[in-house]
Length: 322
Image 1 (cartoon, rainbow, N blue to C red):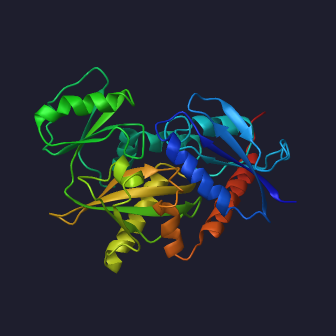
Image 2: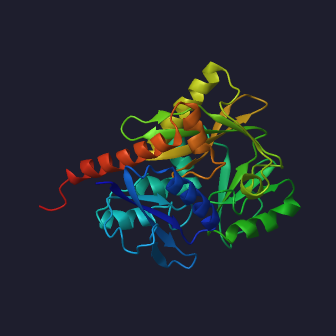
């Protein structure tokens, strides 16, 4: 019998459209000889709408494993993961704790610092508490603490630009992160696994704009993505080590993409953020990095589903009653 996989996508976040594109790539990539695939679409208003892939509605009433591909708020932040835990359903990707922690960029930074991992200097502001005394040099990056795909992010070069940037970020989250801008190169590194995670070959992102924003990622098709990244063997190994260390610092499982900045002036690497449900669109680098590492897309999906089932079996060994 094929394994019954429910692809859960859409959602209420500002990354709804990206989720749709990621879901289509995953559905197309799943081997139909192994999997009976069901769509579960969440509207931007939060309604859940099961959608049959075939002409026979209800052809797949059961679910063996869920593949959540919900980017951002109400999907990547532990909320859906908690629901799936309550339903006792295996699911792909990080659990409740890692999802919630990695979604909050400020909490992530605190945990990384505790492990001795480098992050850019930063400050936080709560919505309504706007200020401009951050004691950080310009340029600054102002972003919602809980969102992805560069939604709501501004690069601020002067004090005059700061209020508008804070106002924009506050539309997407009550907690706002203000970071020192790192002049340098941008990299990404995919991580896969649970107890013994491994990192793929990194890629370099060369934006076509001032920084790698939403338009550059998904609309303009002008940014250059180089995989493998043009790094020395030593730099590659260090980035992979740091990616795995960051992954473990937030207790991630299944998959994540760790983003880096390399400062031009010093050559120092900084961890920018951790994405527990990275993009799976046709241009997304998480699967492309694994493909460069020798793991084709269909095999990558197999591994992720296998990790989900393994984790669920392990969890079932835990007693929840006296």
